[in-house]
Structure formats: C-alpha cells, structure tokens
Image (cartoon, rainbow over all chains, first blue to last red; front, side, top):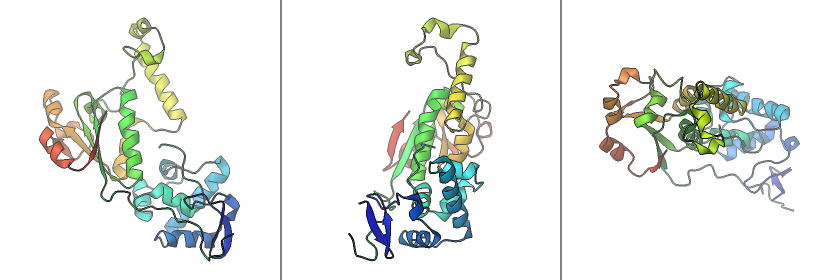
Length: 104
Length: 169
C-alpha cells in the first residue's frame, strides 16, 4: 500500500500504516496519527517526537528507546507513561518514521 | 487511488495475546552469555509484555554487587572464537578477550550489563534471585543489586510464571 490518505492528505505508507516519506509529515499529521492510536499529544510527547525527527534526519535511523533516553535525556520510565506498552513503535509511528532497526 | 478521508492503515499496537508474560532464566555468568537474556527481556518490555528475570547459578553474578561490573569473556572452551584453544590459557588472555568484546559491544551502542539491567528495571521488568544459588554462595539480599525484588525458591518461580513463556539461557 504505497499511497493512502489521512484527513484528505495524500501520504506514502507501508502495509502497517507507518509513513515512508520523511517529508510527508508535519505536526498536524502527527496529531491525527497520535489520535488514531489513542494518544493526545502534550508538550512532553512533542519533545520526544521532535527529537526522533531531528535524530532521523542526522543519522538516517529511527532512534531506539535507549537512544531517546541517553541522547534526548527523557527517562525510559516516562516514555512508557507517554506512549504506553510499545513506546518505541508508537513514537516512530507518530513521528512519521520507520520502526527502529536496532535491538537495544 | 483511495478516495476515503482516511485510507491509511493504522498499526495494531494492541497485545497480540492479552496478558502475555515472559520469564528468562539467566544461568550463565560470562559476559557473552549475560547479554542474550538481557537483550530479549528488554525487547519484550518494549512490546508491552510482562517480564521476569530469574538469576540462577553462575547467572547470579549478573546481579551480585561484587561481580556485576566485572563479568568476563574467555576463549577457553569456546571454539566459536575460531582461535587455537591453547591461546586461551595464556596469562592475560581472558582480560584481553574481555576488553575486546566490551569494545565490540559498545561500538554498536549496546550498554554494559549493569546499565542494561537499569534500563530493564526502568521499563518495568522484574528481577529475582534463586534461593538455592544464593544459599550455596552465601549471599544475602543486601549483596544483590538493589532493584532485585527478592529471592525465590524453585516452586515460587514455577508458581510466578504460570502462563508465561519461559526461556532458559
């Protein structure tokens, strides 16, 4: 499923629904993506999402949970509260990035 | 293509099996064998699974204050290093092999064992020590890494892991 629409916007996604084109994303889209998985974005959520976006641009990889904790300084515990159960994948989804590739 | 307002699929972040639970029995105290359980436990937590780690026999070194920072890797008895086995017995070889392995692990961004444990605990994982092993090694709760929740005997462990997927490492 390469092309789909979210709120009447044309975007590129993979079979699961993760955005595949970095430039399709903006904050309005992130709000829609987040609400689709039951998350209302707060300032703390945005801090993580913006870090993921920035980090992906610099490294070409989606940050793992550990990287968000060590580099962005957001404690792991908080990430589990902000994005319950599957924080790494939920953050990646909302940030319009692929799932993290690394194991840790 | 699609004309719906929302045609993009939404990933399924719900539990595949509700209440999935995993237990990892860590029985080895070498640096190389400490990692598999920690990596998998950490990954399971990231998937929203309830995780318990049970440290038994040599695996107890991973959560013993005195040893957890100094787990080592040896060439001896490990043919997968593809080195002549006689080399492993030379003085200093274990230290050298250990520091090389630590460098390789660090180079891919994976933390040392105590830091992995810290992350597992921060992610909601539960750490337990084995009663028989602590008795054998004359260890008390205060000799163990602080976040260890308790010392369990074999039947406590069996009871606790009711319905869990259990991995012995």
